[in-house]
Amino acid sequence: MSVYPISSPPSPQAVMDTSFWSLCCYCGLEPYLWKVWARPIWVPTVVKNQIFYHAGDYPDQQAFQQAEHEGLLAIRDPQIRITQFRSGEREVLSLAQEVSATALIDDFSAHRYAGTILGLDTVGVLEFLVSLLEAEIITLAQAESAYHQLVQLRATNQGWLKWAYNQIKQRGGNP
Image 1 (cartoon, rainbow, N blue to C red):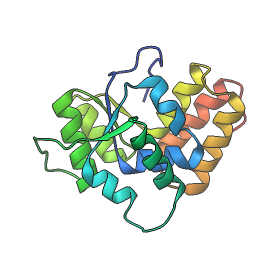
Image 2: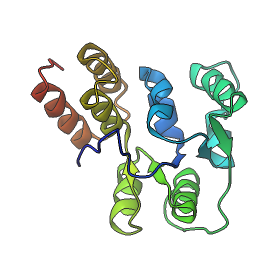
Image 3: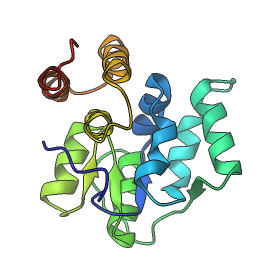
């Protein structure tokens, strides 16, 4: 895992998965997505449906509606289909491959497959967090706070958590 420079992201376009969006919203990183990737960030229909699966007024749903209304997110479905993984990951990887975009995906297996087998640029939430810190878009205190929230959720890969811990610590933080 490496940190890509924010000034030149892997691909100017991105396709986002459910967990990446929800985790970014949970720890307050979603406003920074458009400092890195072009507008709109693509979201397959199945991902939007997963975000709105539970009826309610959840923060990630509110943020999604606002971002979609502002043209920051747009629904787009792939024409080609890969067959591995669950529906959201399949659609994200298929669309990212189709439009040569970065796959914003936090599922470890899909992330690794996209990078090693499909040759796609992939970014997980913790890679995004550390990249924002490195580019001084967020402060060390913000990075530590987001990191602690992700640890409490237990919703991301333990290896990535350890990597991010070391990255934040190397930059003078106390994660």
